[in-house]
Image (cartoon, rainbow, N blue to C red; front, side, top):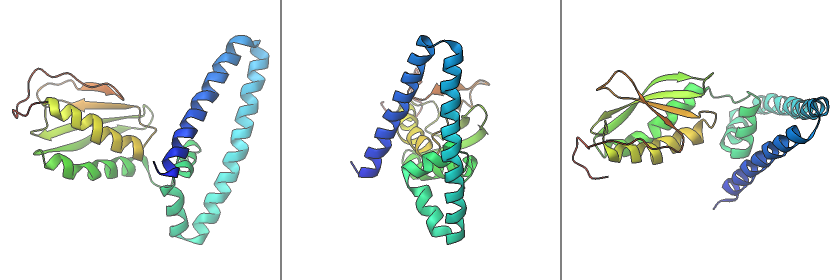
Length: 190
């Protein structure tokens, strides 16, 4: 595993540990003390966010190569997202993620279309096109390729909703949950 991916995994574990510690403190401290702990964390985050904002400004002054290097680094990009400093919009990142998996989908006679993106709900609504629509193997494709591409490009997305052209309601797919289909119209076995 490349060192950058290892660091990203370690940082995810660190984030999980912070959440766990906060939950433990919330239950063991009196409310006033816990409010002070939360304020302390907000102030530290604001301080580092202010520093990161300045770094982004300086990088912008140095040219696009420096900013691109920051965006390409998993750790720095995640911090840019946390502090709402990422220079590439959510919509552009999601579309780029879908574009990256379209060649794979095309090999199965399918495609994916972005119908809607709700940054407040941290959700995207997609439609599977072609032979991928309604097929059990398309759920695998969605789970492994489309979902992974979206999560890597836009980790703030937590809900992927797949619109089914044969019905008026979409089938919501929360990250990590696969939809169940009765049959595969394309005849491809799962």
